[in-house]
Image 1 (cartoon, rainbow, N blue to C red):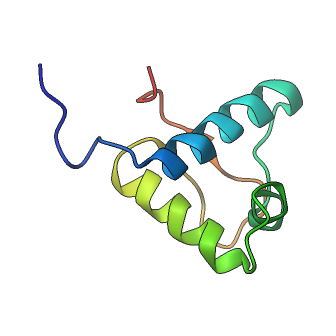
Image 2: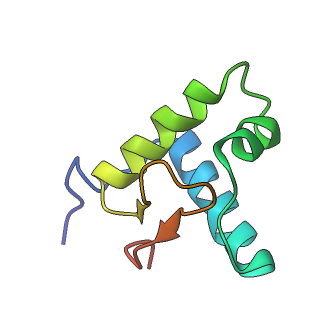
Length: 78
């Protein structure tokens, strides 16, 4: 089965997803956007939000808008 463009991750998206998997496994809840930004040394939380939006669009994560630490894995990461 070939991957479609909606499920193919860029290298950075794969790194962010791996970070989310590890963080949630270690803590039992998702990181904040600011924590993701700090972990990857992004200049702005907007960069982390863009990666998260791409991961959501591709079906890897979900979250409740306006709620801190609500990032959840969907199980699509295998």
